[in-house]
Length: 180
Image (spheres, rainbow, N blue to C red):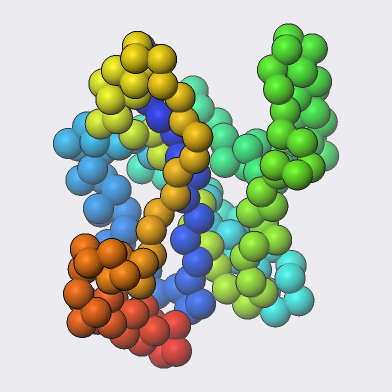
């Protein structure tokens, strides 16, 4: 089976207050075969910038063994300590020797640096099952991805897709969570 398009989503939390809602929604999406969570990490950064990592998962035991810690490998986070760092370096060198292009410094995304001190982040590596037929149709038509990104509610107001009131309600909800 070919893998669907994969996306790394990084969500920040000023004062995490998890009630299981996020995991429940991810599980609902998995059950409907819309997405698959390949891997998920919670990263806590204290006021001094020190990082603590916790592996999160909705994967079965078999999937977890098969996939390992892909987010950590993707962002260069040596969860397995020096052993994990060395294993990652060996795999990276093998990939480069096999002609796999590696990101240059100008293309790199330092996910950990983007997490503000004294906050937490959830890093979700998601496979979009729903997009496989669309991706394949685009490829058959000779198309390719030039870029992608989520659009902010403010920009959606500017183009008339949501009302200012709807965007303000979202901002109020998010602001209430960050100042509480």
